[in-house]
Image 1 (cartoon, rainbow, N blue to C red):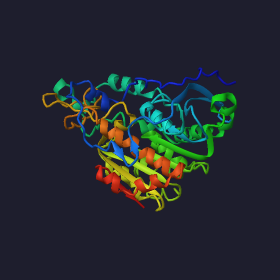
Image 2 (image 1 turned 30 degrees about the vertical axis):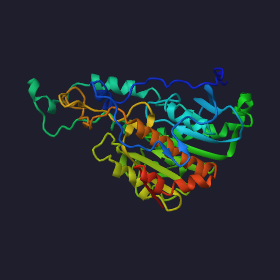
Image 3 (image 1 turned 90 degrees about the horizontal axis):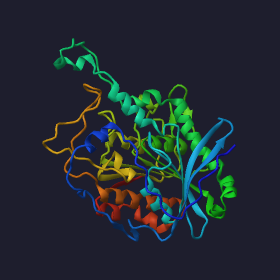
Image 4 (image 1 turned 90 degrees about the vertical axis):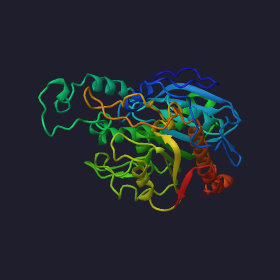
Amino acid sequence: MRAAAWPPHSRRRQPMKRLVPLLILAAACSSAPTPTSTVAPLKIGNYSVDVGPSPVGVIPTTMLHDAQRNKDVEVSIEYPTRGGPFPVIVFSHGYGSSDRGYEPLISYWTSYGYVCIRPSHADAAAPRDTIREALERPAPRSQSRQRGITVEPNVQPRNTMEAIWDKEREPQWRDRALDVKLVLDSLADLEQRFPELRGKMDRNQIGVGGHSYGGFTAMLISGARTFSNPPLSMADPRVRAALVMSPQGTAQNRGLTPQSWSDVRIPVMYMTGTNDRGAAESETPDWRKQAFEYSPAGDKYFVLIPGASHMSFTGALGVFDLPPEMPRQTINQPGGMTPVQQQRPGILSRTGFGTIKLVSLIFWDAYLKNDPTAREALSGQQLESSGVKIEKK
């Protein structure tokens, strides 16, 4: 039985405030200077960071039922209220976010002529549990010399955020990809259930996007494979293009090897920022670029945005600063914490997020609307003159 949906609205919903990983929370709690700009493309060709011409209709929540998994998946839907049909974008959220996240980005795409659907994955409420576990974990004895506790050699503290990948394994990876497939399977049903969606969705022009863990999900849907136990291949031929923000590179705990991307045949844009670092020290922007490097040539893009951090892609948080007088916060050291990298002054790179909006919209227009002007804009000259680094193969 499907749960009833909330009534649709023709206004934008404010993004819900959610707990964020300790890597960000520790810095956010400190006082910080006013935002500063790091990159300034506010306009590229005819593309602007301003809201598009179409009013945005919203179906805040409805349920999709997967009979095979006996699972209900909550989704939110945003659609242009005028005209149609429009390409469809299914967006997969990062670990612990939900179908309410990434609203500034989703509403922006929608206002330029896209129907955007966000499923809420099973890990949607996870961060609060992760944070609580980190705060309640006793200090590792190897880190407790100053507390007068016996020190045990060779005991390494665990990074709580990296430990996510210890419990998020093949069943969870598969489940997330199946959530996306369920959305695609349900497009006709959604049109029947919601009259305002009739004639809105072009089911021949489908894109999948995602950020962080959602980027991993988008890579699976676009053809990436894991060489884990068991191996996982979840490519969906209905998808015409993919946008992967903060992608993962090769990693044993993700089952990703240099061969993982060999079957990615559709257009993909891999996007990261110069401050986009993960939980492990090795998870740098160069590591994230491996997804692009190991993908076969043919409409593949790598975009590097100066100043953008891991959270810049959400539109809610960006590059945090710890004032010079503030001691470095840590995660998984005594009390369960590891170091948080100090940044240059600037709590939020607003223009960096503007760049994310612009470049992503240009990509969608190029491959879901076959717009020659958008493809020309992706050539690199206009983007690079604005400070963005872009590579294509």
